Length: 267
Image 1 (cartoon, rainbow, N blue to C red):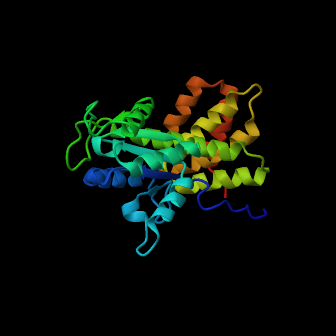
Image 2: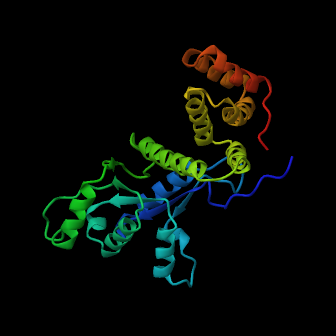
Image 3: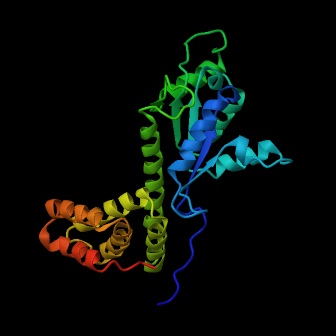
């Protein structure tokens, strides 16, 4: 079999840019660690997220403004931490304006509530805050040091996973040949990450629910999923097969059962 083509280093990596006020640094440090952990895989050096954070991402001696702009323009998602200080920060306002200009998705995360109409929140700052309020927020209001426990943190993780999945979907939807698709599946398989498992699972469902089902393409995804699940124990895969038997016509579950018996690595 001929070698599969290589993908760019960031093809399957969600690049996240953090926009915040320095006054909130202790909180942002903790959430930065949480977001980084969301993309970690069992393999050293292999991650599904990279977090652009000026405290960690600007090398000493570099022109910080240029590096910051480059980081923002190369990002897939902007996480904006909302607080009274960030809403009045000219730097934050400029970052979000640039993100809007380049159609970067923005997810506001409320850290500290903003009291409306204080003296500092006037003019451009008030217009900025009003625009941010129109976006769907994730509220971490009330989170306390060391900032590792809050019921909405899982929603933040899910938001990253959804954005990552959309990026992979766009990659699969772009014009390419079968070898590129197999390369993508191969790289997903190698991550051994829960996001990849759920993505492969959803992709199989879409292909198998088509009329007629696209069994040949689904088989590539099924083999990759079977290999990951097999590594996590037979009970995990048996549970997946039972779910499929309840949801999909038996004639179509045969593909998944074959993959379970023959977990052939996609690469």
